[in-house]
Image (cartoon, rainbow, N blue to C red; front, side, top):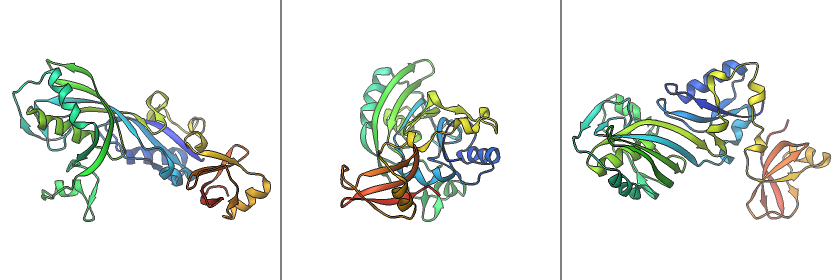
Length: 285
């Protein structure tokens, strides 16, 4: 098996749990996901099968989410599963939320949650948190391409938002920071990832529906997930590429990535350099 699965991860499972279950179903150890989705979150989790694990770095990595921000309380994890550390009786209005969202579009500096898997000095942040150790978390720059208010429940003090963002953006941090800026406190009540690169929620298969009988039919060929131009190989060039030989050609931009194809199957990822397609990842046997 060689390709990707567009899995709908249920709430309550870790991304690692999903990979472990798929390893049991397929009997293949070479399986990995393209980016962690928090256990309490649900939605799109692209999974690589077989040699597709070598293609993760070439996949589009923009993400899109739907989330519900609960105002009036803050938690130590920035989501509904954490311990409440702050409360507020101040009520927020829809117009106030709309104005607050302006502060979180474009390139922003974000501090990841302490309860996260980011490593600092060789340890994951949540390991510091569980040990009760204080640590200074460095901020990092992320990009929010779109942030919209989809609905606001005044009585429940819940705002439903839609977010398109770069890889590495923590929606929990956005919810928490909006709560801080509002003076009302806030945390993320619900999170659904609706898009990860070219993988979308409308085509995602629920994990519980994947089994030994149908998994092969669900695998997405790599060529359907890569946005590179293609170069068709013949038998002679196929043999050369398998041995790592670069191919002289033209028609591509300098440093551009290209998929080398034979009989509609991916053979290699190459990069165009000085009139040659230089092999970066040979995937054919």
